[in-house]
Length: 151
Image 1: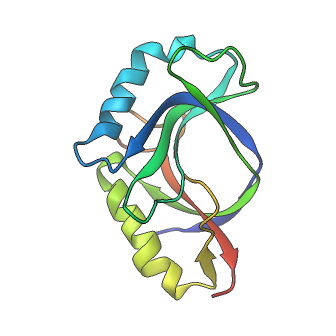
Image 2: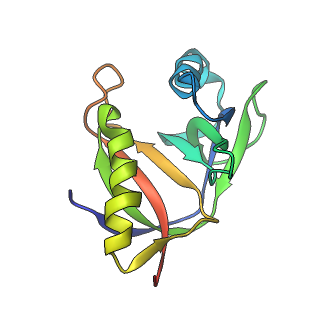
């Protein structure tokens, strides 16, 4: 797997929030709900993101399925705006069918063997580029894991 270390500038995302453990595949359903509403998001500037706050001790987490925006104003009903601060990330390419595998590899294999550690205050995210095909789940998808140097 070709892992890159990048510094991602601050950006904002507007979309639909979720809070829980994803025990019943709520996140894929969230994306399905977002599809017909994406035109409600003003000032979209590009790709789709799945943002994930750090997982809590009980396994629950906050997640946002949305789109990058130039300005987070006039939020549609039921949507939230999150700002992701500038951060250093390890970037793992994947496909929709291998996203869990990519996360497992990042946390269980790559991080323990690297000169980095997970920045647990940072926001993990999935990036769905223009090349991503929602019909197949192939191409143009990446998992970004916030990292800091030092074990």
